[in-house]
Image 1 (cartoon, rainbow, N blue to C red):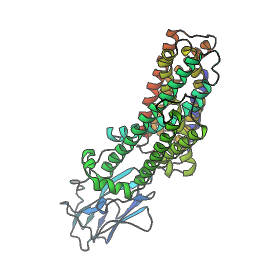
Image 2 (image 1 turned 30 degrees about the horizontal axis):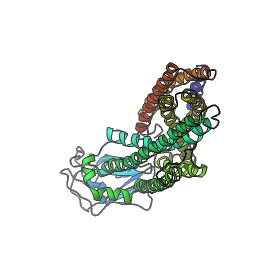
Image 3 (image 1 turned 180 degrees about the horizontal axis):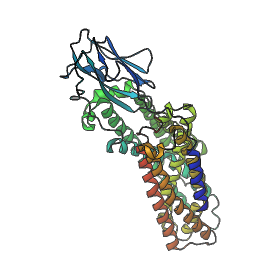
Image 4 (image 1 turned 90 degrees about the vertical axis):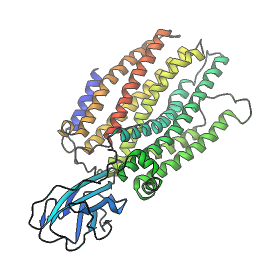
Length: 470
């Protein structure tokens, strides 16, 4: 507990030195300014943001009168400066209140809606005309949060599964002296089968999650409901083909297809093409693991590059930190699930040596998990520092409060991890752990897994919130 307290205090100390954040697009200025009263109608309405924005459709930026009738002289367009959107206005507008409505896509893929009014003539300004404005799902709604959560679970689960097989399972199964040949074959075959079943489920799940995310993002961009967006093939095609988010989704889809192909080849190599499966090994070839891991790292890099890190200072460094954070958390959480599965199934697969082998897997995972959690904390702190300009934003903004929730959830997880460490020390002195002890390990791993998945849910909300510094 002293070590955990030291880690928490170190995180708090680093947060007090928060730097300036650049994340999330927001309106910097407009011409006319919001609330301005002009003697004559302007030729053009210009709105300027703090970072480059995308305008998917010309109607996503418009000027309407008090009855909702459009008064634009032509389609809205981005200016020579990609931070500027220009809306030409018809000359000779009559006196009255005019509403400027816009919905643009920021460089971090967030949809930024807004509205303001200006007046022509001496009369009082009226209320903005809001009828007919888009009403897509919020990025922190159930739809947005669930889409990002499923994407992280699918892709993170894949890279975590690969890491578990090559850096936990394979080393733990290296020396099987004292294990009968029959049990060795049963254990290795179970490990191989479990890996490929998990790989297939997660790979298909990741592809479905990417499609789900595309539909939800399209609904947000098009200002419509999710079910309506699902039926709007043209709108989805626009988002997919005309936005940076869509380009990244296409890249991830292509890389996942390549991952399927490599996985299919390795599956055939490991099982053989004949009716009789080949004898199982601890893991596949090292180069196949490296190739599949590399493909997944690039896919996850695309996720890191489409969020807040992409528009922070030193974007290349922040994207790298975000990618490292995602991978570390994925390896840790997936490892917890696999440890629970190992302690549930391995004693049944090999009655004589299953318990001892489960303990070896736990001991190996404990070392890996310690490294992954350390990387996750360090990278998380550095990313937090990059997105806050004042420590007070931790409790004054929803973004900061989400970070505090993540930090609070680490405390019980840390306590469970320390308790598990004591169990590992005890198991190291036992040749054949008993059933109740293995069941206790399984329950502790399950509790850690449940809490860590809550952290992922919080993170799925966090990436859609406006950073404190913005």
